Image (cartoon, rainbow, N blue to C red; front, side):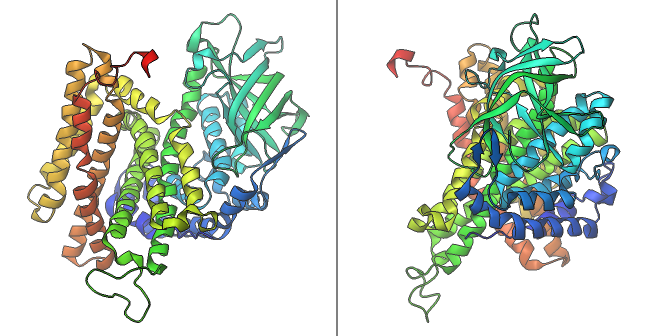
Length: 592
């Protein structure tokens, strides 16, 4: 059975050496002392490794079962959920006014990575609840907040988001679910939603569905969409679950992965719903959940890569096969561990350099969310808006690739179920699809985000990289291995942006045909920036004799691999972008 080791040392390194969070000035970060974060991460790591990780194969093998509209989760899930709830983990970064602990989103991100690596399917139940809580907190009335948030933060009640319908996915303007106004101010919700994660289960006593629907007579398309709170059980006068609402789970999807999470078909038959936010402004409210979910899915992508890499590394250390090219490394044994072979080293370094760079990128994104929300920093809010599709798209594409590389490390053993590697591959695959496919993310990045604020935000990103390079240009220890590669990659990104500006207006296909490559180009530059920042910290630590020399030497070696072997992909992506859209659009539709 696969194992999971919480990467708390690397998280502490990022929080306190690289980001220096307690000195950042972001409200609430002064409480994030090394001792405090170590205590939180240690406890989260313990429950991840000892409670959640052993249930991961159980959930995969057993899946969820549906009988008479009731879903039963896999063995052990309910007890684990209750333990998580009692430990207060579901409200770690929630508003104290409603029972949360008020910790920064950054700390929630670090804890969330461990929960996802340990058991992604299980963590989705509380992840969906967190998103629903955020939407209610941002757009609900004071009465709605008082009624729903304390119980959702506690975990007694859970939440979902209901968008997709059988005939439409991304194009939500086509939804058919109706919301008929009632005299008492409620609405009758009727329609079918599909692919609803955690739509029905036995973990909480009530499930609060957030449902997109159209009020008759409203505007056409997305401008006519409203968002409604539709509880499984209607709260009674005391705020407890009362009458069963007119909704039911009509089926469970049979999926490639995340078997431990119930992915439901939900039928609403005149169910009582309560408008959240303004009528016909549902997309604004839903995107509070959607943007949070996209960043969370980016975390899922690399977090699956983390646990897959850990287990591949363990296998490579133990599996004996062949001899090292320089001579036996294990002369007393029949063969050497496969870790001695250069191609296995390449494979593992590819994995390691990605997941550590991705963690730094995700933590940086979480820090921007905290600055935007806690310090009302408009520039941070604009930057995380720009980078959200990169976090979601790039980290899930490369995270899935990492699980495949990890599986490859095992050879034939990785193709068999007991090794556990193939589950990580199957579970990671969904991250590239849900919450907006990665193709949609790339279109959002190029079609919408690049031009936001008149292009000021992307220019601010370029200036950030330029400033970092200038501040460190005299550091000869970093120049060749880190600064020069980052400078070249940043120039590739700028050249791609210039191409879009020059050609996109003349022929939009020239820009949109290159959007996927641009998302990856951007992602590589972001990870290159993260590795350059980590290299500066570790180089200084070694020069000053601070900390663990082996840790910092390993960090520098891993960073050099990324800069030399992964970052040069920006040139390939630029070449593809500059080839334009003619070859992409050359065939008529009937010639495929």
